[in-house]
Length: 405
Image (cartoon, rainbow, N blue to C red; front, side):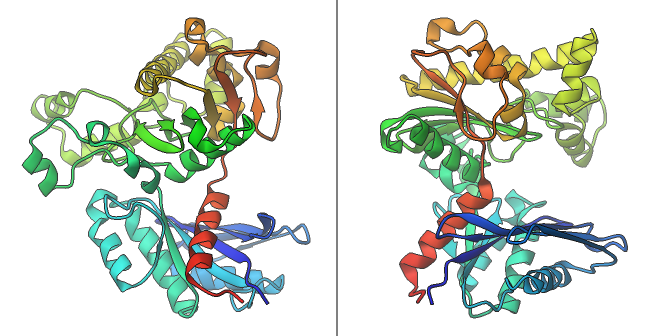
């Protein structure tokens, strides 16, 4: 029997998301989420897509090991357990791979040690990712575990884009550079955009706009990232749900000197109390647009600031690429907020950028073109699928390294 299934795990600090996919046709067999791990009110929601059955349980789940065991039990109830000979590998989302990991890696002790070494660059994410990997290894030590890194797609950036203009020795000592994030999404969407155009990825230049509660842009030339908006951390770049995006670094110094704010207080301000929620008290674009339509000036200003920053990055990446074949909107806001797409490209007609009002307003589930027929630059809405991308990269790596028969 050929093993064709991949279990994708996304371990957060208090949650565990999972999907089981069959790579013969990229179909999903099961999905689920364990949340509030470590609390008495933990919840596991599991859906078996093979039968359509959904089960939900509540009660204390003490740690990630208990969470993954509970997931294994749920999968087993559907005949999809971790002991199945059809399971080829487990793919893990790892947020930060630094400069060390330019592609997925089969996990061994050396890989674990390097991910551990990178914890200072992602103190909220990498520890949870490590916990998920170690737990999965303990349950299936014989099964290949693959780490797929959010940062890997962006390691093709030239030094001119990745380096900050600070003292080189200081930057090198503390590993300060632009790493970028949402890499699995940017990789998947740029490739799917090329497919939508009927071309190979190496023949297409794409600006990808991943617009969710977290938001990032990338310039992709011939399938390779040459610039991205997020930096050392996911804080840099676009205005986001609760993150400020680009801000003068002296603001932090000013808040320390004049406001007496600590490092932790400033971190909380910029990451959790800024962006849209800081500007107008809401980080849900649907609610912001409702308020705009009702004449709320604070919501209007927040929307305008969001769009202004987005438009600046579109223009900058157009200049970086020189030739743009397509702009792809993705993630929750990018896929669903027609007003954001329209406003972001308004006034850019001289660059060949425009949306067709009817196509842009129409709802749709799959990848679709929303620019006018014959437009110089294709504007597309391309739903992202980070779990499928992780599974695809995992299966490709394991298939190349192991005999799965």
